[in-house]
Length: 431
Image 1 (cartoon, rainbow, N blue to C red):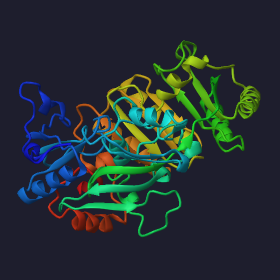
Image 2 (image 1 turned 180 degrees about the vertical axis):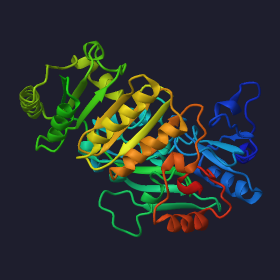
Image 3 (image 1 turned 90 degrees about the horizontal axis):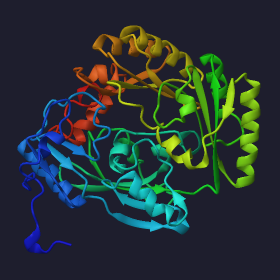
Image 4 (image 1 turned 90 degrees about the vertical axis):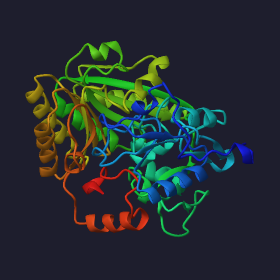
Protein backbone atom coordinates (compact mmCIF):
# COMPACT_ATOMS: atom_id res chain seq x y z
CA UNK A 1 0.00 0.00 0.00
CA UNK A 2 1.39 3.44 -0.95
CA UNK A 3 1.25 6.38 1.43
CA UNK A 4 0.34 9.91 0.25
CA UNK A 5 3.97 10.79 -0.32
CA UNK A 6 4.57 7.69 -2.42
CA UNK A 7 1.98 8.32 -5.12
CA UNK A 8 3.48 8.69 -8.60
CA UNK A 9 1.44 9.73 -11.61
CA UNK A 10 1.42 6.64 -13.85
CA UNK A 11 1.79 8.75 -16.97
CA UNK A 12 4.96 10.39 -15.69
CA UNK A 13 6.57 7.34 -14.12
CA UNK A 14 9.65 6.89 -16.33
CA UNK A 15 10.80 3.72 -17.99
CA UNK A 16 13.88 2.15 -16.47
CA UNK A 17 16.83 3.73 -18.30
CA UNK A 18 19.26 1.59 -20.16
CA UNK A 19 17.12 -1.53 -20.24
CA UNK A 20 15.64 -1.18 -23.71
CA UNK A 21 12.20 -1.26 -22.12
CA UNK A 22 10.56 0.95 -24.72
CA UNK A 23 11.67 -1.28 -27.58
CA UNK A 24 10.25 -4.30 -25.72
CA UNK A 25 6.79 -2.80 -26.26
CA UNK A 26 7.19 -2.34 -30.01
CA UNK A 27 4.38 -3.34 -32.35
CA UNK A 28 5.70 -4.20 -35.81
CA UNK A 29 8.76 -1.99 -35.26
CA UNK A 30 6.62 0.90 -34.00
CA UNK A 31 7.82 1.87 -30.53
CA UNK A 32 6.03 4.05 -27.99
CA UNK A 33 7.51 7.27 -26.69
CA UNK A 34 7.27 5.97 -23.16
CA UNK A 35 5.94 3.19 -20.96
CA UNK A 36 3.57 3.73 -18.03
CA UNK A 37 3.30 1.26 -15.15
CA UNK A 38 0.01 1.78 -13.32
CA UNK A 39 -0.41 -0.30 -10.18
CA UNK A 40 -4.15 -0.01 -9.63
CA UNK A 41 -7.30 0.34 -11.76
CA UNK A 42 -7.57 3.92 -10.50
CA UNK A 43 -4.12 4.70 -11.89
CA UNK A 44 -5.11 3.15 -15.22
CA UNK A 45 -8.14 5.44 -15.44
CA UNK A 46 -5.99 8.48 -14.52
CA UNK A 47 -3.50 7.54 -17.22
CA UNK A 48 -6.21 7.29 -19.87
CA UNK A 49 -7.85 10.57 -18.85
CA UNK A 50 -4.58 12.49 -19.04
CA UNK A 51 -3.60 10.85 -22.31
CA UNK A 52 -6.99 11.68 -23.82
CA UNK A 53 -6.71 15.30 -22.74
CA UNK A 54 -3.23 15.59 -24.29
CA UNK A 55 -4.13 13.74 -27.49
CA UNK A 56 -1.78 10.84 -26.76
CA UNK A 57 -2.47 7.33 -28.03
CA UNK A 58 -2.34 4.46 -25.52
CA UNK A 59 -1.89 0.74 -26.14
CA UNK A 60 -2.85 -1.48 -23.17
CA UNK A 61 -0.21 -4.19 -22.73
CA UNK A 62 -0.46 -7.45 -20.80
CA UNK A 63 2.00 -10.22 -21.55
CA UNK A 64 2.47 -9.14 -25.18
CA UNK A 65 1.63 -12.61 -26.50
CA UNK A 66 -1.32 -11.41 -28.62
CA UNK A 67 -0.07 -8.00 -29.79
CA UNK A 68 0.31 -9.33 -33.34
CA UNK A 69 -3.48 -9.24 -33.72
CA UNK A 70 -4.96 -6.26 -35.52
CA UNK A 71 -3.63 -3.56 -37.79
CA UNK A 72 -0.56 -1.48 -37.07
CA UNK A 73 -1.40 1.47 -34.78
CA UNK A 74 -1.88 4.88 -36.39
CA UNK A 75 -0.29 6.51 -33.35
CA UNK A 76 1.52 4.98 -30.40
CA UNK A 77 2.64 7.30 -27.62
CA UNK A 78 2.24 5.31 -24.40
CA UNK A 79 2.39 1.61 -23.66
CA UNK A 80 0.20 0.95 -20.62
CA UNK A 81 1.96 -1.97 -18.92
CA UNK A 82 -0.61 -3.75 -16.75
CA UNK A 83 1.83 -6.24 -15.22
CA UNK A 84 1.45 -4.70 -11.76
CA UNK A 85 -2.36 -4.68 -11.86
CA UNK A 86 -2.33 -8.34 -10.93
CA UNK A 87 -4.08 -9.00 -7.62
CA UNK A 88 -6.40 -11.81 -6.66
CA UNK A 89 -9.37 -9.67 -5.61
CA UNK A 90 -11.76 -12.35 -4.36
CA UNK A 91 -12.21 -16.10 -4.50
CA UNK A 92 -15.34 -17.89 -3.33
CA UNK A 93 -14.73 -21.61 -3.88
CA UNK A 94 -18.18 -22.56 -2.61
CA UNK A 95 -19.78 -20.31 -5.25
CA UNK A 96 -17.33 -21.30 -8.03
CA UNK A 97 -16.52 -17.61 -8.59
CA UNK A 98 -13.18 -15.79 -8.72
CA UNK A 99 -12.30 -12.12 -9.30
CA UNK A 100 -8.83 -11.20 -10.56
CA UNK A 101 -7.12 -8.14 -11.96
CA UNK A 102 -6.30 -8.03 -15.64
CA UNK A 103 -2.52 -8.20 -15.34
CA UNK A 104 -2.48 -11.58 -13.63
CA UNK A 105 -1.21 -14.36 -15.87
CA UNK A 106 -3.36 -17.36 -16.68
CA UNK A 107 -0.82 -19.59 -14.97
CA UNK A 108 -1.05 -17.70 -11.66
CA UNK A 109 -4.86 -17.77 -11.77
CA UNK A 110 -4.78 -21.52 -12.24
CA UNK A 111 -2.34 -21.92 -9.33
CA UNK A 112 -4.71 -20.08 -6.98
CA UNK A 113 -7.70 -22.11 -8.14
CA UNK A 114 -5.89 -25.44 -8.07
CA UNK A 115 -5.36 -25.08 -4.32
CA UNK A 116 -9.14 -25.48 -3.95
CA UNK A 117 -9.52 -28.15 -6.62
CA UNK A 118 -10.88 -25.77 -9.27
CA UNK A 119 -9.74 -24.25 -12.57
CA UNK A 120 -10.59 -21.58 -15.13
CA UNK A 121 -11.61 -23.19 -18.42
CA UNK A 122 -9.71 -20.65 -20.48
CA UNK A 123 -6.72 -22.06 -22.37
CA UNK A 124 -6.18 -19.82 -25.37
CA UNK A 125 -2.72 -18.55 -24.46
CA UNK A 126 0.64 -19.32 -22.90
CA UNK A 127 -0.07 -19.71 -19.16
CA UNK A 128 3.25 -18.31 -17.99
CA UNK A 129 2.98 -15.13 -20.09
CA UNK A 130 -0.58 -14.50 -21.28
CA UNK A 131 -2.50 -12.15 -19.00
CA UNK A 132 -6.19 -12.51 -18.30
CA UNK A 133 -6.99 -9.03 -19.62
CA UNK A 134 -5.11 -9.60 -22.86
CA UNK A 135 -6.79 -12.94 -23.45
CA UNK A 136 -10.23 -11.35 -23.03
CA UNK A 137 -9.41 -8.32 -25.19
CA UNK A 138 -8.44 -10.68 -28.02
CA UNK A 139 -11.15 -13.27 -27.22
CA UNK A 140 -8.58 -16.03 -27.08
CA UNK A 141 -9.84 -19.57 -26.78
CA UNK A 142 -8.21 -22.96 -26.99
CA UNK A 143 -9.05 -26.66 -26.92
CA UNK A 144 -11.42 -26.53 -23.93
CA UNK A 145 -13.88 -24.34 -25.80
CA UNK A 146 -15.73 -27.42 -27.06
CA UNK A 147 -16.97 -28.39 -23.58
CA UNK A 148 -16.80 -25.15 -21.60
CA UNK A 149 -17.44 -22.44 -24.18
CA UNK A 150 -15.49 -19.28 -24.96
CA UNK A 151 -14.52 -16.36 -22.73
CA UNK A 152 -17.97 -14.85 -23.23
CA UNK A 153 -19.45 -17.89 -21.49
CA UNK A 154 -17.10 -17.65 -18.50
CA UNK A 155 -17.13 -13.93 -17.65
CA UNK A 156 -19.67 -12.77 -15.07
CA UNK A 157 -18.55 -9.17 -14.61
CA UNK A 158 -15.87 -6.60 -15.37
CA UNK A 159 -14.34 -3.36 -14.22
CA UNK A 160 -13.12 -1.25 -17.14
CA UNK A 161 -11.20 2.05 -17.28
CA UNK A 162 -12.52 4.51 -19.87
CA UNK A 163 -10.65 7.33 -21.60
CA UNK A 164 -12.76 9.94 -19.76
CA UNK A 165 -11.28 8.74 -16.46
CA UNK A 166 -14.26 6.72 -15.29
CA UNK A 167 -13.99 3.24 -13.81
CA UNK A 168 -17.17 1.38 -14.72
CA UNK A 169 -18.52 -2.02 -13.77
CA UNK A 170 -20.73 -4.32 -15.78
CA UNK A 171 -22.27 -7.66 -14.94
CA UNK A 172 -21.98 -9.00 -11.42
CA UNK A 173 -20.19 -11.35 -9.08
CA UNK A 174 -22.69 -14.18 -9.01
CA UNK A 175 -23.37 -16.89 -11.58
CA UNK A 176 -27.07 -16.01 -11.91
CA UNK A 177 -26.94 -12.36 -12.92
CA UNK A 178 -29.48 -10.67 -15.18
CA UNK A 179 -29.15 -7.04 -14.13
CA UNK A 180 -28.63 -4.37 -16.79
CA UNK A 181 -27.03 -4.47 -20.21
CA UNK A 182 -24.38 -7.12 -20.82
CA UNK A 183 -21.55 -4.69 -21.52
CA UNK A 184 -18.97 -7.42 -20.85
CA UNK A 185 -19.33 -8.56 -24.44
CA UNK A 186 -18.45 -5.07 -25.68
CA UNK A 187 -14.93 -5.53 -24.35
CA UNK A 188 -14.34 -9.25 -24.99
CA UNK A 189 -12.66 -9.38 -28.37
CA UNK A 190 -12.72 -5.58 -28.65
CA UNK A 191 -8.90 -5.25 -28.58
CA UNK A 192 -9.16 -2.60 -25.88
CA UNK A 193 -10.55 -0.12 -28.38
CA UNK A 194 -13.24 1.39 -26.12
CA UNK A 195 -11.83 0.68 -22.65
CA UNK A 196 -9.05 -1.03 -20.73
CA UNK A 197 -10.10 -4.13 -18.82
CA UNK A 198 -8.87 -3.89 -15.22
CA UNK A 199 -10.75 -6.54 -13.26
CA UNK A 200 -12.76 -9.62 -14.19
CA UNK A 201 -15.09 -11.97 -12.37
CA UNK A 202 -15.25 -15.52 -13.75
CA UNK A 203 -17.25 -18.61 -13.07
CA UNK A 204 -14.87 -21.53 -12.57
CA UNK A 205 -15.19 -25.31 -12.59
CA UNK A 206 -14.09 -28.21 -10.40
CA UNK A 207 -10.95 -29.93 -11.59
CA UNK A 208 -11.76 -33.22 -13.34
CA UNK A 209 -11.11 -36.27 -11.19
CA UNK A 210 -9.49 -38.03 -14.13
CA UNK A 211 -8.19 -37.13 -17.58
CA UNK A 212 -6.79 -38.94 -20.57
CA UNK A 213 -5.80 -38.45 -24.19
CA UNK A 214 -6.38 -40.66 -27.21
CA UNK A 215 -4.45 -40.04 -30.44
CA UNK A 216 -5.08 -41.49 -33.87
CA UNK A 217 -3.17 -41.13 -37.11
CA UNK A 218 -4.89 -40.85 -40.50
CA UNK A 219 -3.40 -40.68 -43.97
CA UNK A 220 -6.54 -39.01 -45.40
CA UNK A 221 -7.34 -35.53 -44.06
CA UNK A 222 -11.00 -35.67 -45.09
CA UNK A 223 -11.55 -38.89 -43.16
CA UNK A 224 -9.71 -37.50 -40.12
CA UNK A 225 -11.69 -34.27 -40.13
CA UNK A 226 -15.00 -36.12 -40.54
CA UNK A 227 -14.36 -38.44 -37.60
CA UNK A 228 -13.15 -35.50 -35.46
CA UNK A 229 -16.37 -33.57 -36.16
CA UNK A 230 -18.42 -36.68 -35.44
CA UNK A 231 -16.73 -37.17 -32.06
CA UNK A 232 -17.15 -33.48 -31.20
CA UNK A 233 -20.90 -33.72 -31.85
CA UNK A 234 -21.31 -37.03 -30.00
CA UNK A 235 -22.90 -37.45 -26.58
CA UNK A 236 -19.58 -38.44 -24.99
CA UNK A 237 -19.09 -34.97 -23.40
CA UNK A 238 -15.47 -34.78 -24.53
CA UNK A 239 -13.41 -31.82 -23.37
CA UNK A 240 -11.77 -31.33 -26.74
CA UNK A 241 -11.34 -32.91 -30.16
CA UNK A 242 -8.76 -31.51 -32.55
CA UNK A 243 -7.16 -32.48 -35.85
CA UNK A 244 -3.68 -31.20 -36.56
CA UNK A 245 -0.68 -31.43 -38.84
CA UNK A 246 2.89 -30.19 -38.69
CA UNK A 247 5.78 -30.66 -36.29
CA UNK A 248 4.20 -29.26 -33.14
CA UNK A 249 6.80 -29.52 -30.39
CA UNK A 250 4.26 -30.48 -27.73
CA UNK A 251 3.18 -33.54 -29.69
CA UNK A 252 4.75 -36.93 -28.87
CA UNK A 253 7.72 -37.95 -31.00
CA UNK A 254 5.74 -40.74 -32.68
CA UNK A 255 3.29 -38.08 -33.95
CA UNK A 256 5.93 -35.66 -35.22
CA UNK A 257 7.63 -38.41 -37.17
CA UNK A 258 4.59 -39.09 -39.35
CA UNK A 259 2.98 -37.24 -42.22
CA UNK A 260 -0.78 -37.01 -42.57
CA UNK A 261 -3.30 -35.90 -39.97
CA UNK A 262 -3.51 -36.69 -36.28
CA UNK A 263 -6.75 -36.54 -34.30
CA UNK A 264 -6.43 -35.90 -30.57
CA UNK A 265 -9.28 -36.45 -28.11
CA UNK A 266 -9.28 -35.05 -24.57
CA UNK A 267 -11.33 -37.11 -22.13
CA UNK A 268 -12.11 -35.65 -18.70
CA UNK A 269 -14.46 -36.35 -15.81
CA UNK A 270 -14.94 -39.05 -13.19
CA UNK A 271 -12.56 -42.03 -13.56
CA UNK A 272 -15.22 -44.50 -14.69
CA UNK A 273 -16.61 -41.99 -17.21
CA UNK A 274 -13.14 -41.29 -18.63
CA UNK A 275 -12.44 -44.99 -19.08
CA UNK A 276 -15.74 -45.35 -20.92
CA UNK A 277 -14.96 -42.31 -23.07
CA UNK A 278 -11.57 -43.70 -24.02
CA UNK A 279 -12.97 -47.12 -24.91
CA UNK A 280 -15.67 -45.61 -27.11
CA UNK A 281 -13.26 -43.15 -28.73
CA UNK A 282 -10.72 -45.88 -29.53
CA UNK A 283 -13.45 -47.98 -31.09
CA UNK A 284 -14.74 -45.09 -33.20
CA UNK A 285 -11.28 -44.04 -34.38
CA UNK A 286 -10.30 -47.59 -35.24
CA UNK A 287 -13.56 -48.13 -37.09
CA UNK A 288 -12.90 -44.99 -39.15
CA UNK A 289 -9.69 -46.49 -40.50
CA UNK A 290 -7.00 -44.91 -38.32
CA UNK A 291 -3.59 -46.36 -39.13
CA UNK A 292 -2.58 -46.13 -35.47
CA UNK A 293 -4.38 -45.37 -32.19
CA UNK A 294 -2.32 -44.51 -29.10
CA UNK A 295 -1.92 -41.96 -26.31
CA UNK A 296 0.82 -39.96 -24.59
CA UNK A 297 1.91 -41.09 -21.16
CA UNK A 298 0.01 -39.48 -18.27
CA UNK A 299 2.91 -37.17 -17.43
CA UNK A 300 2.82 -35.76 -20.98
CA UNK A 301 -0.93 -35.10 -21.02
CA UNK A 302 -0.86 -31.50 -19.71
CA UNK A 303 2.16 -30.51 -21.80
CA UNK A 304 0.57 -32.04 -24.87
CA UNK A 305 -2.61 -29.96 -24.66
CA UNK A 306 -0.90 -26.71 -23.70
CA UNK A 307 0.72 -26.72 -27.14
CA UNK A 308 -2.58 -26.39 -28.96
CA UNK A 309 -3.43 -22.86 -27.91
CA UNK A 310 -0.77 -21.34 -30.14
CA UNK A 311 0.98 -22.74 -33.20
CA UNK A 312 4.76 -22.65 -33.71
CA UNK A 313 5.91 -19.24 -34.90
CA UNK A 314 6.42 -19.56 -38.65
CA UNK A 315 6.03 -15.92 -39.67
CA UNK A 316 2.30 -15.65 -40.37
CA UNK A 317 -0.60 -17.05 -38.37
CA UNK A 318 -4.28 -16.61 -39.16
CA UNK A 319 -7.42 -17.70 -37.36
CA UNK A 320 -10.12 -19.12 -39.60
CA UNK A 321 -13.75 -19.40 -38.60
CA UNK A 322 -16.76 -20.90 -40.33
CA UNK A 323 -19.57 -23.34 -39.71
CA UNK A 324 -18.14 -26.48 -38.07
CA UNK A 325 -19.33 -28.51 -41.04
CA UNK A 326 -17.23 -26.38 -43.43
CA UNK A 327 -14.08 -25.68 -41.42
CA UNK A 328 -12.31 -28.79 -42.74
CA UNK A 329 -12.88 -27.76 -46.34
CA UNK A 330 -11.63 -24.27 -45.54
CA UNK A 331 -8.43 -25.58 -43.93
CA UNK A 332 -7.77 -27.89 -46.89
CA UNK A 333 -8.08 -25.02 -49.38
CA UNK A 334 -6.13 -22.43 -47.41
CA UNK A 335 -3.31 -24.79 -46.43
CA UNK A 336 -2.93 -25.66 -50.12
CA UNK A 337 -2.69 -21.95 -50.98
CA UNK A 338 -0.03 -21.46 -48.28
CA UNK A 339 2.07 -24.47 -49.30
CA UNK A 340 1.81 -23.57 -52.99
CA UNK A 341 3.05 -20.05 -52.31
CA UNK A 342 5.88 -20.84 -49.90
CA UNK A 343 6.82 -24.34 -51.12
CA UNK A 344 6.70 -25.45 -47.47
CA UNK A 345 4.04 -27.31 -45.59
CA UNK A 346 2.07 -25.10 -43.19
CA UNK A 347 1.06 -26.09 -39.69
CA UNK A 348 -2.63 -26.10 -38.85
CA UNK A 349 -5.04 -27.03 -36.07
CA UNK A 350 -8.77 -27.60 -36.43
CA UNK A 351 -10.80 -27.28 -33.23
CA UNK A 352 -13.59 -29.70 -34.10
CA UNK A 353 -17.13 -28.84 -33.19
CA UNK A 354 -16.59 -25.09 -32.80
CA UNK A 355 -15.75 -24.00 -36.36
CA UNK A 356 -12.32 -22.55 -35.50
CA UNK A 357 -8.93 -23.34 -37.05
CA UNK A 358 -5.45 -21.84 -37.01
CA UNK A 359 -3.01 -21.85 -39.90
CA UNK A 360 0.68 -20.92 -39.63
CA UNK A 361 3.03 -20.66 -42.59
CA UNK A 362 6.25 -19.17 -43.91
CA UNK A 363 6.67 -16.94 -46.94
CA UNK A 364 3.58 -14.88 -46.20
CA UNK A 365 2.70 -11.92 -48.41
CA UNK A 366 -0.14 -9.43 -48.58
CA UNK A 367 -1.44 -11.17 -51.69
CA UNK A 368 -1.41 -14.61 -50.05
CA UNK A 369 -3.27 -13.36 -46.98
CA UNK A 370 -5.86 -11.77 -49.26
CA UNK A 371 -6.34 -15.01 -51.18
CA UNK A 372 -6.76 -16.92 -47.93
CA UNK A 373 -9.32 -14.35 -46.80
CA UNK A 374 -11.20 -14.61 -50.09
CA UNK A 375 -11.27 -18.39 -49.74
CA UNK A 376 -12.76 -18.04 -46.26
CA UNK A 377 -15.30 -15.45 -47.35
CA UNK A 378 -16.48 -17.52 -50.31
CA UNK A 379 -17.27 -20.33 -47.86
CA UNK A 380 -19.15 -18.13 -45.44
CA UNK A 381 -16.17 -17.83 -43.09
CA UNK A 382 -13.74 -15.22 -41.80
CA UNK A 383 -9.98 -14.82 -41.52
CA UNK A 384 -8.21 -12.79 -38.81
CA UNK A 385 -4.46 -12.17 -38.90
CA UNK A 386 -2.94 -13.10 -35.53
CA UNK A 387 0.72 -12.61 -36.43
CA UNK A 388 2.59 -11.40 -39.51
CA UNK A 389 6.32 -10.77 -39.50
CA UNK A 390 7.56 -8.12 -41.90
CA UNK A 391 4.18 -7.56 -43.58
CA UNK A 392 2.40 -4.17 -43.50
CA UNK A 393 -1.00 -4.85 -41.95
CA UNK A 394 -3.87 -2.46 -42.57
CA UNK A 395 -7.33 -2.91 -41.01
CA UNK A 396 -8.83 -4.67 -44.02
CA UNK A 397 -5.94 -7.13 -44.23
CA UNK A 398 -6.10 -7.72 -40.47
CA UNK A 399 -9.86 -8.14 -40.09
CA UNK A 400 -11.43 -8.21 -43.54
CA UNK A 401 -13.97 -5.79 -45.04
CA UNK A 402 -16.35 -4.04 -42.66
CA UNK A 403 -19.88 -5.37 -42.27
CA UNK A 404 -23.27 -3.69 -42.17
CA UNK A 405 -22.95 -3.08 -38.43
CA UNK A 406 -19.78 -1.00 -38.78
CA UNK A 407 -21.68 2.30 -38.47
CA UNK A 408 -22.86 1.16 -35.04
CA UNK A 409 -19.29 0.27 -34.07
CA UNK A 410 -18.17 3.75 -35.09
CA UNK A 411 -20.84 5.33 -32.90
CA UNK A 412 -19.82 3.19 -29.93
CA UNK A 413 -16.16 4.19 -30.41
CA UNK A 414 -17.12 7.86 -30.67
CA UNK A 415 -19.18 7.62 -27.48
CA UNK A 416 -16.60 5.81 -25.35
CA UNK A 417 -13.38 7.16 -26.88
CA UNK A 418 -14.07 10.39 -28.82
CA UNK A 419 -10.39 11.39 -28.97
CA UNK A 420 -9.35 7.95 -30.26
CA UNK A 421 -6.98 7.45 -27.35
CA UNK A 422 -7.06 3.65 -27.20
CA UNK A 423 -5.38 1.56 -29.91
CA UNK A 424 -6.21 4.02 -32.72
CA UNK A 425 -6.48 2.35 -36.11
CA UNK A 426 -5.92 -1.22 -34.92
CA UNK A 427 -9.44 -2.61 -34.76
CA UNK A 428 -12.03 -3.40 -37.42
CA UNK A 429 -12.29 -0.67 -40.06
CA UNK A 430 -9.43 1.27 -38.47
CA UNK A 431 -11.50 2.64 -35.57
